[in-house]
Length: 578
Image (cartoon, rainbow, N blue to C red; front, top):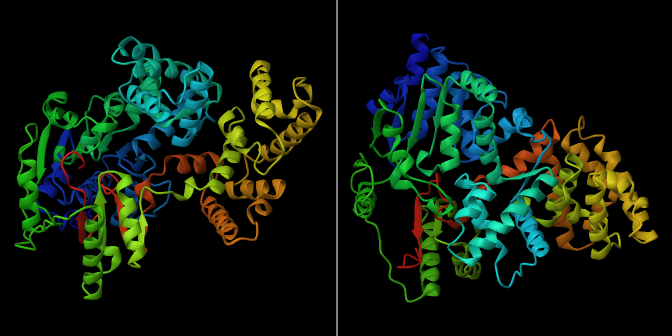
């Protein structure tokens, strides 16, 4: 490393950040308080490792909490090193799920996972669970499908197979039912050549546990492992990291047990508290200087967190002396609360001190947004709702994604069910069910079965003709899947099935739907192949969707993780609610 490189990388760091950057060997725990510049420390640490020629970018595994965070870190790192910022730089920087996808795409065949598996999102998972419940005669009125999904997800995050979960599912009839659904659900996933979000982690762990050859390959490849937000890792993620670590033990984790907010979905904050036990000889560095908040806010936060019985010992401090005190507003009810928030925002904007985009309203559950949306609309306050309907959740987008998924993975019956009558083809539920039963028994995938639908004696001649025509059309487009760009495949679907004509019904809503499809095609142009595009669509999170429009942001406290706003309203802070 030249002296100029060293100055560029180390200048501007405080003593603790610099120590974290220069400590390159062995296990390292960086206890980073809120607003303490942990992202800067991580980026400069990676830059220091690369500039010192300790590792190449492809030999560094860097795990972030969101895709957005990964992209921003990659860009800042590229600028710091003076290299081109593209997808080939730092190829192993991403979320746990995106890293797991890559492991499984490359080596999943070692545990009988096809390389062209599709990823079921939350809607797909719920749809399949409902289908399995119907097969098993479990009434939705008795057991909520969403509750069943939650139990299955928790079991997978705890690395429990259906059989293991069944043995311990003794607490309630709901848990026992979830165990029964879990077993059938897994079989149906395999039939669809699909994995859900939790499978990505669980199967990546199984791959590394079962194949010593694959495990050794990645252990030799990754000279350094860095993990952000370590306090929010779950059991599967913890095991994945342990399996990827080699004998040099060059692992650096960054986190803060004080900021652990995901225990409800399996995160275990004790992972960070037990780091020094798990990795004997580990060094610990505390980043306690806060650059984000004022002294008043830090002191209020410390008085709250100090009541926790299990926590690390640190005390944040700042050079931002004084500041406005935290203001407590006691409102009469939720409507009074929303009106007061709206009035304060308007006063700040009218005074010229802030813009709408500077303000965020945080609450515990999405249901609490309704009264604020109503009040903001009444007061002509522009707002954006994070956690509401995402771009990829719009019907026209999900339809086209389902077409793409079926073309990419012809065994995907969930995607087939979504598109079989979009646009309308006059096929009833009875015909579709009969066809799928015949397809399942024939040993054919959905696409091949459609082409041969004339052989399905259970169907009417009209249904056979309609399905075989659909099959031939899809098979033609399927030929593009291996070589065609995603945007070209979407355009082919639009033309072949006149999907644009189906959307454009002459209404303003129809025009909006067409514009959404144009946006999807534009986004798809950024990807060289269908697999990478479908992965990005499946793995994108609500926090990744935050944009820079001038509007007040409404979102849950969990969605706000990693974001910053000059003005924050914490609403609904009532016992039993927050």
